[in-house]
Image (tube, rainbow, N blue to C red):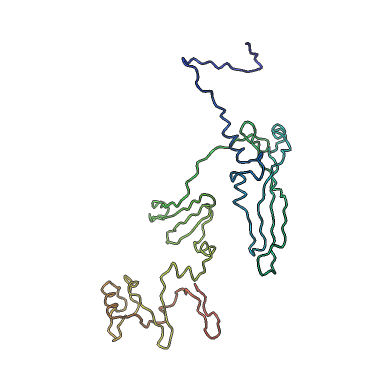
Length: 320
């Protein structure tokens, strides 16, 4: 059989001694079948499986209002006919796509009813936008240009800990960090600065103090201070300022005043560094409260609101 030059056909010759056992498969079948299974456009709405686009809508809905009086449920979706074919989209610089419409159901509850009662139900088809379609070649036409999807490797979800090996700060201090990678959603990074302050980032953006994240999760300033800090208790009364002593916390600190027992014997002198022996002496003497100078409580943060019991007025707020 003779071939013309315009047909541009090539004869595939095989010099193998054995005949080919299996023919070359259709290499685009995987892409075409995968996208077809993702859309499920030809399958009736009531027979679609929880995969692909159907699974995406089911994961987002239902959407409930903050008051709980309105609820939006997903019913089904429908892909319309594409307005232009592939060649027209390439000529006009358009995207080869089909209109996507989603049928949703709005349920409104009766606010005045004592029991949950449905007041009104509305069902409507909503236009969601254009969904790109795959051509017979396994590609997409975006703004008149033919494009293909390139598969990528994703980081496995989990928590990863690391440090900068001392390369960030001039002192060579190790700055530790942690990264939370979810299966789906934003990445969350936690990192220390040279002053040991903890910050966080969302999707590698601007860093913010971690207290902002804790407040967004519902923690109050009182809960944050009480959870992440050691607290000291002071009683202000006729005798002055009484300090509830926790001996173990004083180890290694320099005494700002004399610490004496009930008999007046000085256990730790002022300006002396508190050692393990001093702590044993304090515990042996049974010292739990001592009167401290007023300036000892200056510059400290309050972990709970101080409220006047008679008037209910807030004298000092937490973290002041």
